[in-house]
Amino acid sequence: MYIYDSVQKKKLPFEPIEKNKASIYVCGPTVYDDAHLGHARSSLAFDLLSRTLQAHGYDVTLAKNFTDIDDKIIKKVEATGKSMEEITSFYIDRYLEEMQALGIQRADIEPKATESLHAIEMMIQNLIDKDIAYVITTGDVYFDTSKDADYGSISHRVAEDEDAQSRVEHVSEKRNPKDFALWKACKGSEDICFDTAFSRGRPGWHIECSAMIEKHFIGNEQYSIDIHGGGADLLFPHHENEAAQSRCATGHELAKYWMHNGFVQIDGEKMSKSLGNSFFLKDALALYDGEVLRYYLNAVHYRNDFNFSEVELQLNKKRLDKLYRLKKRVTPGKESTANKDFKQALLDAMGDDLNISIALSHIDEMIAKTNDALDANPKDKSLKKETLANIAFIDELLGFGGKEPFPYFQIGVDEALKEQIETMLIDRTQAKKEKDFKRSDDIRDALLGLGISIMDTADGTLWEKA
Image 1 (cartoon, one colour):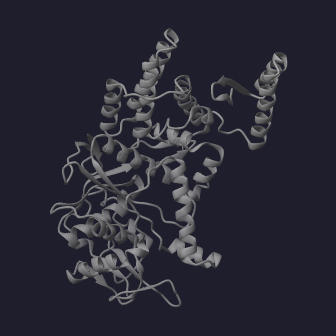
Image 2 (cartoon, rainbow, N blue to C red):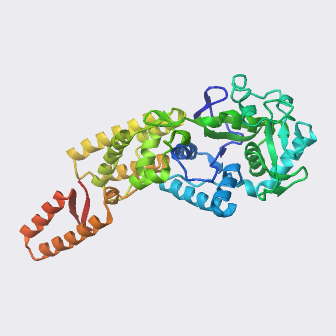
Image 3 (cartoon, rainbow, N blue to C red):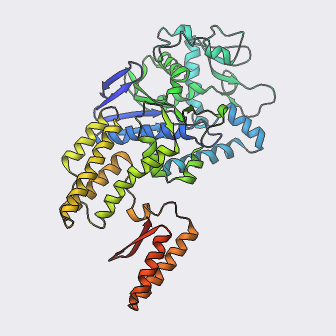
């Protein structure tokens, strides 16, 4: 198993802290609004990583946090009059529902910032005691970047971005322009505040992830976790700052490997709310089935930038349709054992830093060869059983192909048309009972005119979009 390490900028063999185990922490959403395609892309990338590691025999523990205290959330509270808990609970539930629609497995650990305040306070106090963090007169606490000799070792680009953080907030008492906030003291009449020994306030964004990792993972004398992941936009300053504060607080590195997924673009333009092209996931799911979106969003290697295009989405849907048309040919039936060579080919591809393009090409090849073999011998039961097992392994590893084929091909048919189809099928069944084959054929033709094809089976008449 090889993965690309963003720090060393090369593929490395995965050698975990503890044999046969893998610990992963992925930066989750700030829950003040609906999830967008960028959230989906990151979640899908690390879902693939988790599935691949499991398929290679690792016992995986995956954590993904929720930032449920933040300036954006407070602004939402002020704008809506709702409580912070009402807002964050709503968007957490919405996020989890949408991730489930994409076939993303739930994280084993889902910590929230508001549930980790003690761990956050302890880590900040530890840094203050070491004079690596300092409290200014307002009660804010800052991390002194000059005290970390390795600051910049994660992103390798601090020199070019050295004033990026100071541009965000000018504080005259900061020791260095690059120093960042660990704790923000409450000002004036603010009421969403938490008491600590250093001031009443709320945590900075970077500290929560470090504290959560130390709270939930044991690690060893060198690293807290095996893999830290997130979007490429988090590399600096978020992950750089996480690494620095954890390194100084614990005396060892935060993660052995750092992995980052690429950006999402919409028709060639980087997705950004300021550009007005932020494609909310709920809008995409209203138009397309979650599994179709999963297939499409995963079809480009996770490290590459992804250009969302509805034309490309439709082309990828047709590619997924081929797998379900094959599944329809071998259904119903019982699965046996997946073909050894096919299974190993997928494992090898995904074991090479999640090389999804090679994996999908193996699937396309399997579909073509199996269809040819079934054309030559339609009654080959052993091949049908093996094919069902192959598709079951695809679903286990890549998260698609697990639906029943006829319901899959009914996706996108509105409820009114579904009722009309069912009524027509009942009439057709009655016509066949009465041996009125002309009426039966006329109904079949009428359904075809509606874009619906049917198949008579021992379990009844099945239908799909033609």
